[in-house]
Length: 82
Length: 182
Image 1 (cartoon, chains in turn purple, cyan):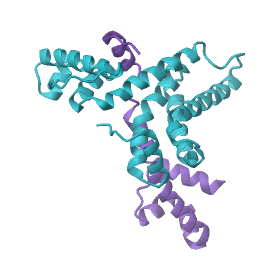
Image 2: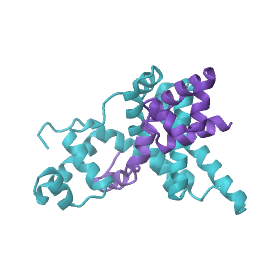
Image 3: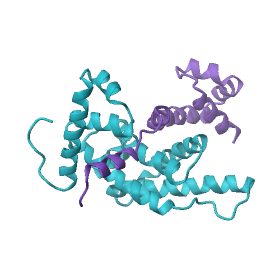
């Protein structure tokens, strides 16, 4: 294929970086998922832990050493409302 | 900057649970997914963000279903397209319109595919070329800003961009890159 420098420049311009926060959130998916999965599994198996979690999600997460970031809290709320 | 790992190798590592590989996969395709949402489907910022996260969430969940690891890019492209259309359909229910897809989507997608190929070729040029071309063309930084970041005179930036572009052109045309330091 034949390219001139102007065309290469135009094509490079077509792919600006996505916003940093979006990329970071997508990159952290596995970590968030792992954290959520183990917490959800434990809440399903341990009624006492589930009660504590539902009563005060943020505090229960902190006790478990998990930073109660809004995305994590929202996801867990949705999970337990389902 | 970007690694030389093939798409197929990266996907295989992701499937094996390698989080660094997932991070790299997101980095490699984030611009492509973003460009489809914003340029081809002209989504608003918040809709584009939702689509972006949904694409990678589904990709993460469904990576095991991918039949050909090397086909990750067209697979992600199709996934992004479907999710953009779903988003536009949901908006159209609130404001009914006959056609949800904006005009010219196919042509824009073709251009973005070509742009992605050129961007991928960047991975094969030296890091200092990747950086200067990315800053100037993709991030739209001025010579002065780049010069400040790289601690180089602005005039040097202009000539470096020119030489790096020539190097990328040779690479795209299948010519052996010049051996001189660019």
